[in-house]
Image 1 (cartoon, rainbow, N blue to C red):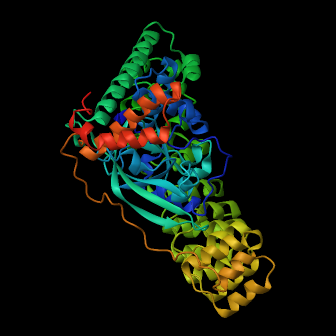
Image 2: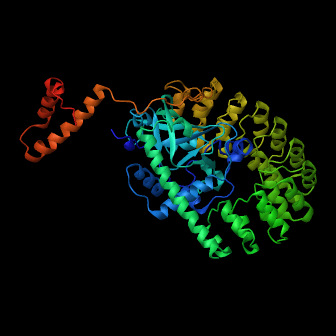
Image 3: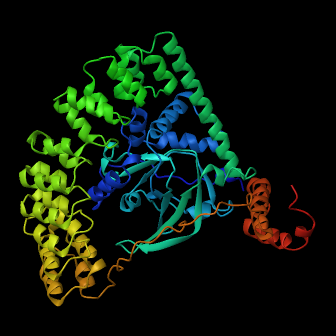
Amino acid sequence: MKFNELILEVVGRELTQGIAQSKDTVALDNDVQNHHRNTILDRVHPDTYGYTISSKRFNRLLWGSKKGEDIPHEDLTKISNIHHNLDSTDAAKDDLIVYSGVRRDPQKMVKNSGGLVHHAPLMSTSINANSALNFAKDIEGTGIRHVLKIKVRKGQQVGGYIGEKSAYSTENEYLLKGNQMLHIHPEFDEMLDEDGNTIRVHHAIIMHPHEYEHLTEHEEVKSHAELKDKLKAARSELESNYDKDIKDGRMDSININMLTPIFNKRHIDALIDNPSVYHELLRTQTLSKEHIDKIIKSGHEGSDDLIASQKNLDSGHIEHLIKKNNDENVYKNLLGNRHIKLDKSFIDELVKNPTYHRDLAKSTHIKEEHIDKLIEHGDNVTHSHLAQRSDLNENHINKIADKGDTDSNTILCRQKKLTTNNITNILKTELGSRGYGVLSTHKNLNSEHITHILKNSSDDSDSNLMSIMSNHTLTPEHKQLINDSSLFSKKSKDMANGLIPPPPQSSEHISHRFDTYTSPSTQTPKKSISQQFADKYTSISQHFKNKYSLKEGFINNSFFEKMLLENLTSSTLKKGVFQE
């Protein structure tokens, strides 16, 4: 079997926008904002955005490259741009788990490769398991859907978080670069969905180069090396073209705006003495501290708001921007810049000005005391932004809930660690159906909370009941409420009354099976005699059926298969029929 046929297809993206909405969207997104913010992609290149709209062509071409097919130059250029756009993020500062729904059973795909697979295409993953599950399709008809649980390890720079900047902003997308070596663990976890269908979660790890480069004869490793050379050559040609355009004076502001190139340091060094391109460089490129210094010292006007968004600002740059300006756009961009450190005294002053309340509520630069003041003095939009933060304490949540704003309280339902007291306060406000749906998943519900949710669930009653029963036992009063209500289906009523099995109880978080990792020490595993026999039998059987049975019809197929099998398992096996 050829390893380049081990295709682990990631599901295409041509689905209705918003289909992957999840009850945990906001809380998950803000976990990334607060704990993995260095992996967030600041500027999404047009080719990257195009990939989030439709990935099918790129991924088909990259899979084809594993079989020796050529990738058109234009597509290779776009793939290179996406990779270099993702390279603008920093390496992960801690382990990060991402999920990908896949079409086929990963175990079958890697059973003869020692668990290793060269994943040639880019991979759209999500930090949200529920989102990934929406892309897991049972195309094999087994009744089982498959999800990859992939560990991005601390120090790896393998992709970037796109989130709300994706064409499908609800998917919590973390885009992994193509041409990765994955190791898939032979064991997996099984669970049931709300319809009783099986979901298998397969654990995978992205390998470091030193963990596979010694496997020089492994087919998947050789495939990886071949694509690496193609991508490197494409990037080299692209950068040489940029060198020529810059040297010949063709890379002006119009072309930078139109072509949206991703320059390296050499290109920017060659352009930095030309003030006419400063605006486009600041808008499209990540500049070094030295480049920012040069632009500031040049006295260039009209680009301070763009400078404020650059990730490599130092304290001197920040001080210059604050002292020089009393500009609303500059201050707002500084507040939105996750890569810098703003002085507390600067934040203290901005909190006093309602103009900045909404931006402060979304900023990573505020402290608990600032949150308290924004709750006290902010408007409903400010409160809704605060409700999305994952660093709120119990008191903050209660104060926002007491404001009685439906939108803010619906968002608060997505906080991961709501206390029983928080839930009581939130339920004082009438929530939308989505709010009740999210609350139904929480483990800290008491009997009164459950009653309230069951009475107010409307169109989502059955789904909310499933969520509640996954974490709680219904009281006789709850069952009576369900039986008397027209909101619940017969199936839900039967489940509440114990006539059909309830949903499985939620379990604690399952740790990743690659908690520790040792790289493979051997090349591609050799097949057993029985496996070689099975492969040869299939090949020879098909050959003879094509040559005789199907063309001349002189022998019955089922009789032929029986005869062939009997001969292969006896004398023919000993006579070397397996020799090429």
